Image (tube, rainbow, N blue to C red; front, side, top):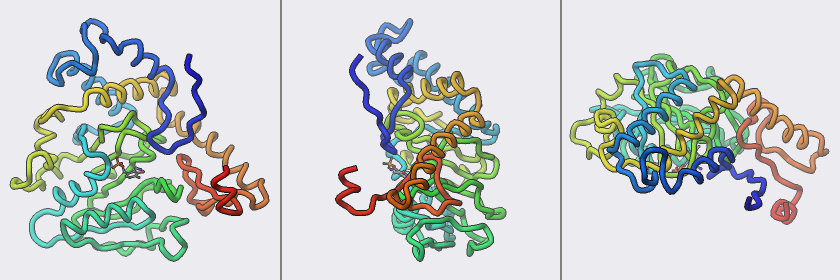
Length: 315
Ligand code: PMP
């Protein structure tokens, strides 16, 4: 076997070897299909089974209620930064609340502001985005179209452990860098999305979990490719779906089910792994300087610096 290195990249991230081995084994021809996943139609019965199984395993891992739709889209998480306000702001002059916790929520706000007016419900700038707000510190607008947060700020390495309390306003979450790392109460969300290339599979597919009633807000005059309703009605097959990333995601979610059985058990595993790194940081007498305040440390992205830029780059 080709030598594989330890790959600590936050994303595109390492994939389980059994997933890669199965994809390699079946790359020339999927069992009973006589052709590669790279060649078959997104409307073939073979692919229909792949996307159905992928969705049903993903739903069972996250315990997604029936009144939520799962969409497999393209354009990465970045396109969601625009599609969310395009679809959910609704008619009139509604605004949305954004919780500004680091680089990715900042990017999301910048893109959303091209679509309408956004309010910042909290900003972690004062302490250089090393912590997260308590719900009581949020300045929320009860009339907001939605309230947006980033469950794990990849670059800062800070992660929410509980959903922010936003009352009846639909909660929207960028879970790109922590989806499936632990169970979440999906029924508390209006919309949850994640690009695949960190926790789900390779780049090329972005998963959106949306509460069905929110589809009614999607403006009819929006370009169909940008409209959640199109993708929900067409079961993510409006245009040619990214068959390979969806196939790999299907193998990843099946692997999680086989290997861990549940997200509870996967979460315990993630906590143990993160603890090893945080213990090393804490025991280093300040040599490794963690960015996140201890209460907000991510189990996904452990961020730290060394005493000088030269040492950091050598590391
Ligand atoms: N949100 C978060 C939390 C991320 O970590 C990333 C990827 N680094 C993105 C959004 C952007 O994802 P994409 O490149 O798929 O647009």
